Image (cartoon, rainbow, N blue to C red; front, side, top):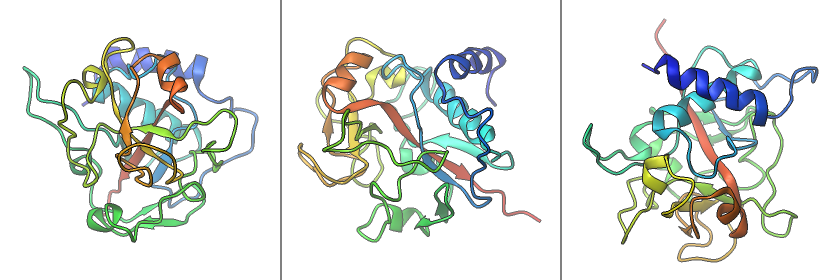
Length: 224
């Protein structure tokens, strides 16, 4: 359950940094269960931890009319004193997932992490149905925070790979993917595990082709 304090903090962040969609007559497709955040909270990779990141997903989704599902950030995290390590793939339900225009991106977790996944610049749209800048655009924002391996498990390379479990906007690094499936790094065509970021600040994320964006998935209620 999301705490009241986290909700209040991220409600404030949305007011100041989320896109102004009030007054814009836009509603996401009723089947939307996946999107790429149109904008990050604005504090680098400090997302308020997994709980804060989930809350931000929820508010962006509800702002475009997706109120019936529970939303989770596609982020892995290292073990802490309060719990075990977290794999992004284990947080997002079983699928299927559709983008904000109702286009299928994957039937299930296995397909999501296989070549068959329909994840690219054209399909990885924001909650408002808009494409996100990629390589060749100005500014490039294709580095997407995940902290994950190709299979969606925690990336456990040398040093920090999750910017202090998504609480740092200074020291550390984060494993990122390329939503447009192109660029540099160890796995340049990977949507979830291309390379590590230069740092965790907003400036460092932007300096390597990012903007503090991440993927959101809905756990769809199929009961009844």
